[in-house]
Image (cartoon, rainbow, N blue to C red; front, side):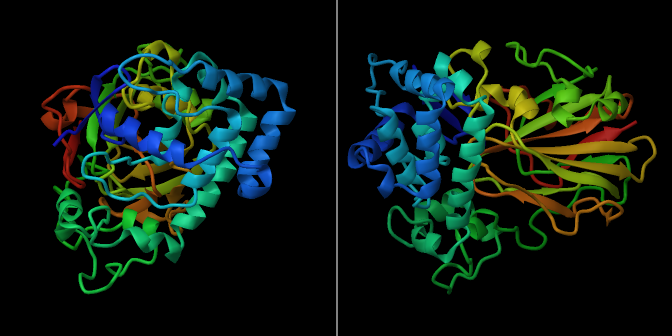
Length: 417
C-alpha cells in the first residue's frame, strides 16, 4: 500500500520516509531542545572537521549560515529548530550516535534527513548541498554513522518496548513473518542495525515470475513505481522541473550513454518498511559494477516545496546522488545490454554491490546484486531502444497516482519485444 506524508505546508506525497508534519516537527524540536551548542572538542572528530571547513571556507560558511537563516520563522509549525551553525553540528553529532527507534505516530525513517529537511530546501541550501567540499564532509560523517549502525551497539533499538522494533506494532508494520529471523534470539539473530535493516526474505516468499522466460523482466527491488521515461536523450537539462533523464549524467559515461540513447528508463522508490536488497531483473552476464560518488541532500529548486525532500527530486538525483551502476548483458539478444542503477537518497551513504558481482559473473534472474544500507532509496532500470514491448499495468502508475502500490520483488515488471 502506498504511504503518504504531509509537511512543509501540508502537501502530500508517497514515500513515508518522513512522517506527517506535526509529529515530525515535534521529533526534530525535541532533539534540538535536548542538544545545545557544543565546543568542537566535544564533537566527534568528523563533525568537528566539518565545523572547521565551515569556519575556514568563506563560500561554505556563506551558504551554510544563510540556509539556517532562510528557514521560515512563521506558519502553523515552529520550524526554525536549528539556531546556529554550532547548534546544527551538535544535532548532527547526536544523530550519528544513535540508531533509529520505531515510533508508530512519527516514524523518522531518515533522522538526519529530517533534521536537515528545512535547510536543504532553502535557496542557500540548494547551493550548499551541491558543494564538493560539503559532500566530502557528509560522506565522512555518514561513514562514521554507518560504522555505528554496523556495530552490535546499534542493536539496542531491537526490543519489545513501544519504541522497539520487536514491538507488536513494529512487527506488523514490517511484516516480520516474511523475513528470516530467529524469534527466540534477543536481537532476532541480527548482528547490527544494518543487518536487521537489510534482512532477507524467507525462502519462497518472493518467487521469480517466469524464471525460464528470457523476455520476462522481473522487478529488481520491492518498490513503488515513480515514472517511466521513454526516448531518453543522451544529454538533457535534468535540472528543469520536468526532470528529464540525461543518460550521460546518470551513467557518468558519454560513450555508454550512446548505447542507451532513445531507450527507456523505469524508476521506482522504496519505503522504510520495504526490503532493501537489489536483484537481477534478467539472466545474463555482469559486464561492470561500480559505485559513482555524488551528493547526499541536494534538491531541485524548480520543484518548489517538497513534502518529504528530496522525494519530488527523485529523477534529478539519479544524475547527481551517490549511486551504483551495474551493467548486465542479458541472455536474450533483444534485451542485450541493460543497466541497474540503485540510487541513494538522504543518508544512504553506501550502495553496497555484492562481493561476487564482478565482470564475467553469470547471474540468473532473481539473483542478489547488492543492497542499500540504512536510508531512503530509489532505483532505475535502463533499457536500449526497442527492447520493451510493454510494462505490466502496475508498473505504469505515475508518481502520485493513489492507485500506485508496491510491486513485489521478482514480479513480472515488463516484457521484451
